[in-house]
Image 1 (cartoon, rainbow, N blue to C red):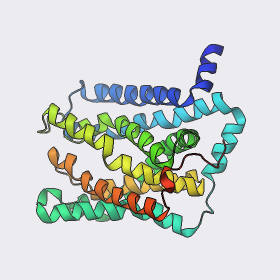
Image 2: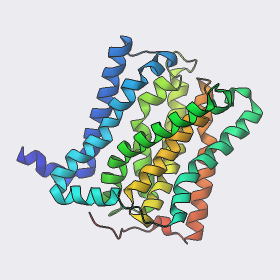
Image 3: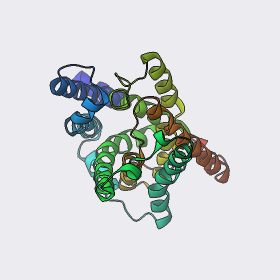
Image 4: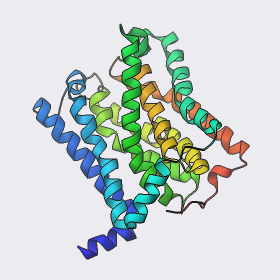
Amino acid sequence: MQALATSVRTHPLWWYYVVTFLLSWGCIVLAVWAYTGGLSPTPEQFQLTIPVTVPAMLLGPAVGSLVLTGIVSGRAGYRDLRARLFTWRVGWRWYLIALLVAPVTLAASVLALWLYSPDYAPRIATAADKTSIMIMGVVLGLVVGLLEEIGWTGFVIPRARKRFSVLRTGILVGVLWGVWHFFVNYWGGGGTNGGVPLEIFISLWLAAVLAGQLTSYRVLMVWVYDHTGSLLLAALMHASLAAFQFILNPLTPGITQQIYPWGQAATMWLVIASVSLARRGGLVAAGHRRSL
């Protein structure tokens, strides 16, 4: 047991991802199996499992962070985590950036595609009860944002920033964040029995993980956190993305689900390039002023 604790303290990031993936993937696979009787649900069947699978999957980042924080940093780590979670005096402009980047970039992508094809009609446009969709999106976003960021920003990012630049940290965390979503993307996005051949889905998914929506957004999240030290703001920024993905997500399964996020990704990489130029390469500078 002592050897295990020593290994965790020596390689905290490696262990965080091991624990998080085992918990999240294990829970979601078990939940889908229990709910549908197999591991090949249709997108419609998977939607029915969401009240079970989403909470089960979210256990990974939150529980992984809390357990490893205790092992690595003890009570001081929990105090630091709590302090960052309640850091809210960061300036109004950071709130604007955190809350508006996702809806602006996602709406631009979806609306442009909607002009091209009715398959890309956003959920809110076709919903009979638009108020309920908005409320569900906000509630879902807040829950997802808080539970996930206790892990990604609460544990991983401050430690990664001791070694890597904002850009490299964002790409590292963003890629693994994307991989973590594999089962949700595959089952929920129409990969299984949804008209997308496995080889096409895997190709699109790998490209999206390496340079897509979540990777680019995570770079911006790391940049915002780097200037505010606020875990609360990171959770709100994540919540904004999750909420507007739910509200604006086209409901047509299959290839449609795999293509529309690329417009947002392209827009966000342009934002990242603009920030880097404005900050004169600040996104690629290593080192971090904050301590754990």
